[in-house]
Amino acid sequence: MAEAAKLEVPPQQAERVLFEKIGNTEWELREVRLDIHDDVALWADNPRLQTSAMEGFSSEADLEAALRTTSGYDGLRKSIQEIGQMQSIYVQRTATGKYLVLEGATRVTILRELDRKFTTGRHQGIFRQVQAKILPQNFGEREVAILLAGIHVRGSGVRDWGRYIEAKFIYETVVGRPGHPPLMNQATLADNMGKSESWVARLKGAYEFALKFVEHVDDDPNPKKLAAEKFSVLEEISKARVIGPQLRDFDNKAYDELREEVFEMVRSDVFKEYRDARFLKEFYDDPDAWAQLKTGEKHVANKLAQQTQDRSNSPKAKIATIPQLVRRAIDRGEDGFDDDDIASLQRTIDLIEDKVHDGVHPYRLALKKATRTLNKASRADVTDLHPSDIADFREACQYFDGLVGQHGQAGGQ
Image 1 (cartoon, one colour):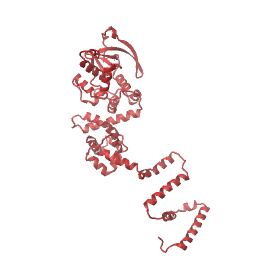
Image 2 (cartoon, helix red, strand yellow):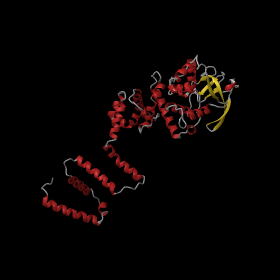
Image 3 (cartoon, one colour):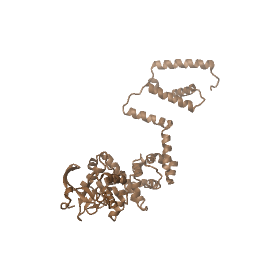
Image 4 (cartoon, one colour):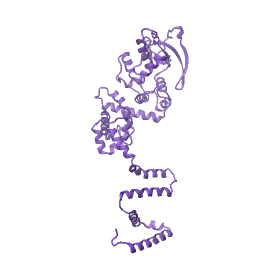
């Protein structure tokens, strides 16, 4: 957009020149005071508005109404009313002569609201102007994306957009949107966001999944807004174990029906919160649980998730994981296991056997186990034994035969 001549401002509010690093480039910016009604215009493509009307805005009044519903609006309004504007907005001159607000629309909306409110008294006129940094002529769409990424995503204390807006911004920056080609690749965007490339890729994938949801619920009055509201659940589903990659395999028709079932669950509010979707694989593997989800009962997934979690935390579930834990440790080269570990496991086995075979003397169980072990012996097992092992065993057998001969009952017990 072409840069216009310098805006006329009162002497006490004269402009100043700033040098600011945005991305990897240092830019020369002019900081001025602008009239909030006459000099600036709100940006309809403002990413923060992508969870509001979602279908475009016909007027500035519509844009202001949408901004008043965004998170943190009331708190910021109170702050501006009490102590004034603390941070400059970013604007760019348009062909109409007005300055388009690329960053800071919420502050402009609040100042307009306060200026309309205080038409008399000591507050009259003090909210009429906004402090703004004017972006230079060669500051294009790519640079705007870098600016917004740095303000709303990078580092701590940022004015967080929320996951849906971040995901949409990532997708449209690296994939593009109608009439707008991609602005940069994932690696470059990740660097400007201060995030890992895998983090960027995950959110991009989650947004692609949300787009498929929009297609599925196209009969809804506002499918894009519904996708924004359900995005945390959709994101969790898209990365669920095993089933997540299947649902995102859009070219494989084998998973189309499954995807439709899951989308109907999301539409029907079966998931009370995104954490419920973490158990999607367990739900799918349980025909009864899956059938309950398909009924569309509101928040039923939350009840099923609690049941699944209770089962996974039970002693039985933990015991079932021991072989895998030990195997993985051995595969990693951990060699800290010793006879004490074997003894601990054996005590555990003894406790379980006592419970399973209640009323049966432990020695009888041990004898049955020894008998099974002997019957399964191979030539290799025998040749591997030390002579002393065989001698000890034969001595024990003689002792046992003597006891049986003296005290055993005909036919055994």
